[in-house]
Length: 294
Ligand code: GRG
Image (tube, rainbow, N blue to C red):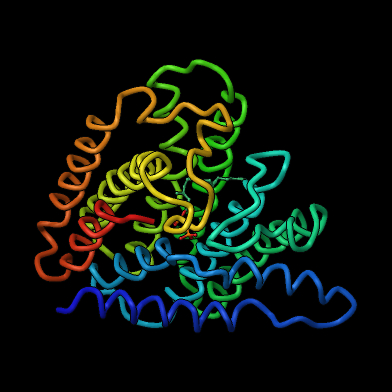
């Protein structure tokens, strides 16, 4: 398998479906559609939808139901980025190499564009669930709603926010990383496995793979914030320091962090062993992400 080609094909498929699910500007409120589409098509890596498609394939899933769910994940992710960039949160001017949503549309519309994407995500999943009359889809929605909520991404963001300019310990940082970033990545894999009607063992293995990959991804993000460049990352570097945020690098050092990312990535690959060749793409993706530079 040519993994890079496979990755590019998956990105194209996600982009095509996403284009169909996020309506074009229309009616009196047309500017909100523009704002939603602006951030949705600003050049994201589409990691979470790709993880979901890959988990679905790893358990032998067939059919179309995975696409609306994969796009819903990207909508939730984009909502979180738009809100995270607001002056009330990280106050960032650039994201994905472009001006942030509030810099183009103003704060009010950026808040509403984020809200609208979150709502559209659930509308998209519910429409697909009704169409396919699928219990697995209800389970997948449950997993996604939980991961995006107070026991997941929002909970992590809350602790991230209230910890700014404070000295925090490793347990608190682990809580932030586990919930703010890892929860949605983990949900992408678990929900993909559920939609593909995986066995309980397969679903558990992909859930664990998601935990390791999500943690590795966030710690790599901490590393890149120190060692990368704005051109490469598409957003300012050293933003964690600027915002008074503790990171894995600030608590444990650069060398230890790099080693830990490697360890987590190897652990993730270990969970894919029983999937044999069906797990190869996810194993490759885990290695690819470990060496990512943006
Ligand atoms: C505002 C409710 C709320 C939550 C915000 C995800 C998040 C929580 C904040 C984003 C800030 C951040 C840097 C989180 C770390 C996770 C991360 C590396 C996000 C960026 O994800 P990528 O690299 O982005 O997949 P692209 O642009 O490629 O989609």
